[in-house]
Image (tube, one colour):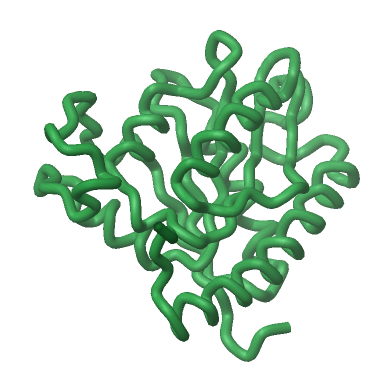
Length: 201
């Protein structure tokens, strides 16, 4: 175990009316806090305006782009994270526009950090959204970990109080992912301290 706890940001990706994301995110946050290696910051994208109109220069050319003042706290919290977990539903075989907007408004904040995923949906458990997010974060020079948590037919898996009816399988998946995030988060945090990451070339 590292000598310092890692700052873990858990991002609720959906802003849909009546969304189930907070239930899933609260369950995972409890698992992360009980793991012992993380200080958890639960970020709800519904709390921040996320305009779709981006500045003229792409963030690769202007990583410190001008952002709306209301986005400053979100940017600070993502930047402060040593590791990140994205909680995402699956909309039309992909992930929500709110999540893509939050990703696209940032660049260096994702660099050389491990990313994990918790997916939920009616059929696939969010796997199609997760696989697309792996490609997106790879372009942003982040490292997505192998293990993930998936909730197919999520509406049958939680009781009215937001507790899992049969927690053993998802808890094991969460533990595996958190262990990976702990290892990668520690290694990459130390590497960023020794030498800030910049893309070669």
